[in-house]
Image (cartoon, rainbow, N blue to C red; front, side, top):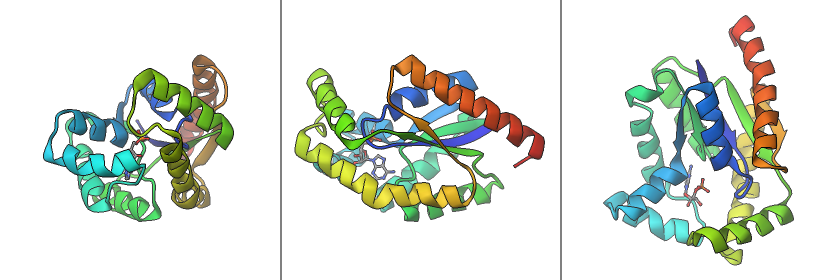
Length: 198
Ligand code: AMP
């Protein structure tokens, strides 16, 4: 059983990799960005609230996001593990997730950070904007999302590094190449964690 997070700046390919990795590990992928986008599309009250923030490249407030994650993690398909993508993004969310997991006597096995340089990310995201028409993919919003990553989410990465569960993988390269890198890193790590029980 694996409980893990994937963290990376916008454009690092974390969504794509999360789907591929979760399939290979046989666990559910839980992406807060995807849940928000589905709600925006369905014009639900949650989606209408979240859209304002998403379009500006801001974080959706914790009062909305934390509850959504708590509800999602209480569903039965994540009992045997999960791969969280896009949450937690702030140290306050780390505390909230700790609380959810502690309630069911669970903890994270591994936090995987995909790394990539900012200029590479901006050019990837501008390319994606042309393909998908995502409303949060214009240059000003992209730069704002990257700033938030540096200002807030890197502190999340640091927290998990302190706990000794962080592993970093270079996110630059072809999709398959990055997946192979991740799987070989995870293979080594998860084998170790199976033995030590950490
Ligand atoms: P993503 O697809 O992960 O880049 O998420 C898209 C957008 O959804 C973000 O720019 C935020 O507006 C919102 N979002 C996703 N996850 C979170 C989170 N953990 N906290 C706050 N907002 C989030």
